[in-house]
Image (cartoon, rainbow, N blue to C red):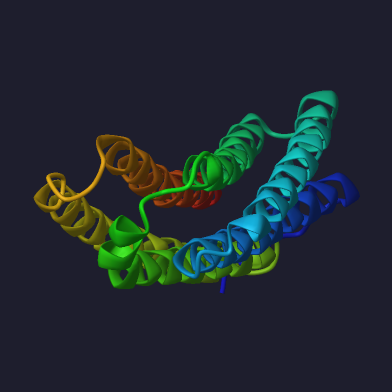
Length: 220
């Protein structure tokens, strides 16, 4: 077990990073709800979903500024500062991708047939994203107490990202197979949604890489 002795400012950074990671889970849940509303034709619910995710994204932006202000305003070791800046930005990028996916899905009324055909795979994809978001929160909660646990969770998230790539490729292939049955705007719209969901997992993977950098500096 690799534990750290933290000062007050380091604890403050970890707490805000963990809160940012918790926000990712909240936003992903709302994105899942938005997909469910689209599937059911409950388009009147979608604007509320978008507002909630935008609000979470704005809160994350304020947290990012607070974290960066602390990191650059206090005397932290350079390696600690670099890895925490990387992690903070990766978490914020994750929430930006959640917002982009939600906005792409809610930008217009997508062809219901397209959603129906892709529905099962899309639900599976978002379930994977949700699981990864829960793990990134758990990862950040252990950063200040047991980095080796965080490292283990990092590798699990990376495996999920690879699994997500396979689902993404299958979804895109299926989307192209039905392009003659669906209007082209809906095809392009759903392609954007799929790519932005992929960006969520990519950003989560980036977050895990910063944890590996952090762990390597501790061991060196």
